[in-house]
Amino acid sequence: MGFVKSKIFGHNEKMESTEEANPGTAFYNFNTPPGLTCPQAGECELWCYAKTGRYLFPSVKNKMKKNYELSQRDDFGFIVDQELQRLQRKQPDKKIYIRWNDAGDIYNATYLSKLVSIAWRNMNVNFYSYTKSVKLVKDAIAGGLMIPPNYHITFSFGGKQDDLIQPEDRQARVFGTAEEAEECWHDASHNDMVTYNEQKICLPYHGIKGRFKR
Image (tube, rainbow, N blue to C red; front, side, top):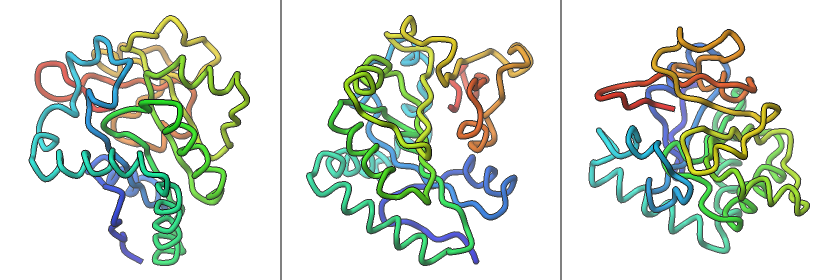
């Protein structure tokens, strides 16, 4: 069965290549406005790919704005649940992966709680995020928030809270090229399944003027 478009989630070329490398999967993303929803952005602002290219198209910017507004609604979780069920009915032969914030980030504790609750209610779907909101996530976990096994959160270097990322954490770091990284770092520049499966992610610089795609 072919790929099913979503009413809420997006899809990009990297996800297409991921699906080609991992038959039987369907990858989707959910984007929010970069900057506005990136409270812990640091040096990453110098290379943010989500502020270039197609992300500057009015239609794309409007979609990210609508997603942000949707994420603030009380019925956000219900709407997402319904869409996930629809996608699974339409392609029962595929395992679905949802990447939160291909653009943007986990911008507050309420949003994080919603994402975690969605994952708990949809254990047959896999979810993943990069985030620079390290303290927010760690404080929530310390306060009792339980992250389900089907939601993988990777802390990304380049923000204001890099010092809070510990060796045992899932983590991602930018390198000039994949060859510069040690063997323990796994290149996820062309395959998002690597992001979901591995603990240490290498993100080579990508595109013009040192910008990279994470």
